[in-house]
Length: 351
Image 1 (cartoon, rainbow, N blue to C red):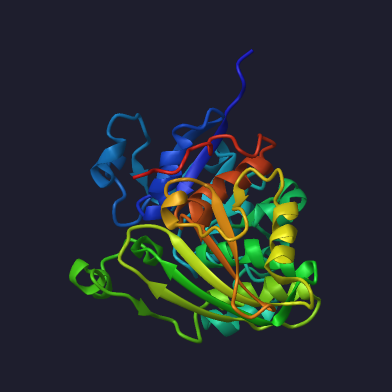
Image 2: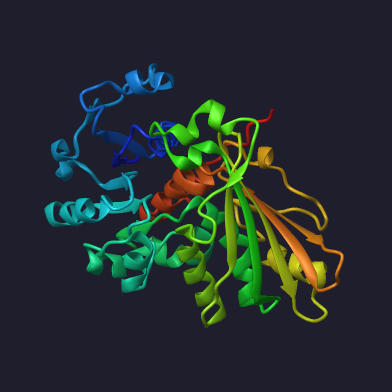
């Protein structure tokens, strides 16, 4: 008997996360792509925007208004922040059966006022914000399985949350002493034409941005505070580096008495034992971003600092896969009752 396939729509299919969703879903055995939307590029063939998809039969790009929601089972929203709230609200009003995995920041924050404080305008679908499940699979797997709306986390936050939250919950570190120094490839800034992202502006250099004010701090505050049971405010600074994809986070932590690097490593190794997409390296080994490029993996390394109560944890992910579209497919698999790893078995590209 032939297994049925879920009918999938991708809103915002002309961006980097949209193209990465296409790359992954075209090899997923249990889905059928029935709708792809783009604003300025509506009416074009996907191959005109992303020539790598020329060999595949895909729907033409259309506007969101043209989507036949009755023919859709699950939608990925890869739209700009601030535009998704009303779109998803209308989708649910039109087709209550549809499941949603949202890759924007619009539903990631649980606190009613946090979104307005960080994004500068009131949330326009507060009832859905409260319903949404934060989509770090390794932390919220059971809740995601029952969700109608999954808020896919940010790339920086995924890379920091995976190593830090288990350590806070285990009492292995001082949650008041968390410093995250993170670097991102240029695709993390999106595909729109910006002067600051021109080749000559980015190559042969590195710079910090959003210093002291980056919006991903809100997600870190939320998840670290939840793990600690009280308000936690970590230090976080993002940097843009001249590579196309990848997140590399160097995290400085103070451990509890007698814990040290061995204790930190033991907590993480035990927590992620059997988890398909998080790999904790042997104690003292340092991960490289190339270890995860093109894959849905997160690699974590634990290194003893010079002081016995200080530990350096280094985590790396591909910002377009585990940091965005791959994690979104992982969430989709759970929502639809599929095996979690389905369509995500790619090994990292090297060299």
